[in-house]
Amino acid sequence: MKQVAVIVASFILLLAAAVIGFYWWIFHPRVEKTSGPVTREVALRYLSPDWLPASAYDIQYYSWFLEVSPGFEEWIRFEASLRDSHALAHRLLGKTWLEPVSHPPLPDDTDRPAWFDPNHISEGIAGGKGYDGEPQVWIDEKRGIFYYHLSD
Image (cartoon, rainbow, N blue to C red; front, top):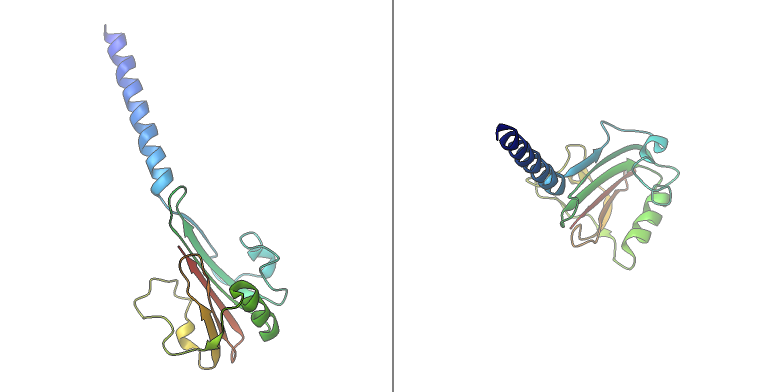
């Protein structure tokens, strides 16, 4: 009788651990990020070569997503030639107009990585929404910095 109770208790504990693990897997965000600026070669572990311009350097990336439910956010910053930055912005945004940056482009309370700061753009353009699957892009034309944000 004791053996049956031990087997049942073990099964219940194992089942509870599996259920807890499954819920953690579903609702715990997966995070991918760089620990600081990286080269294009390193960034290609996270980003598509079709997406990242050949002239890109000092690339920083932060992304989180939930496994099965809606929920994701992606922040990317890199330095690149203005020509490549403009071409990428037009490819990402399609017919969305790029307009001069109005200040501040992001509220100070926006939860974002510290290195993602288009609020320091003094001369630049921007376009897109940044949510509902439509990216938002800023190009600092004075310093040659490209910012990209996308969330659900």
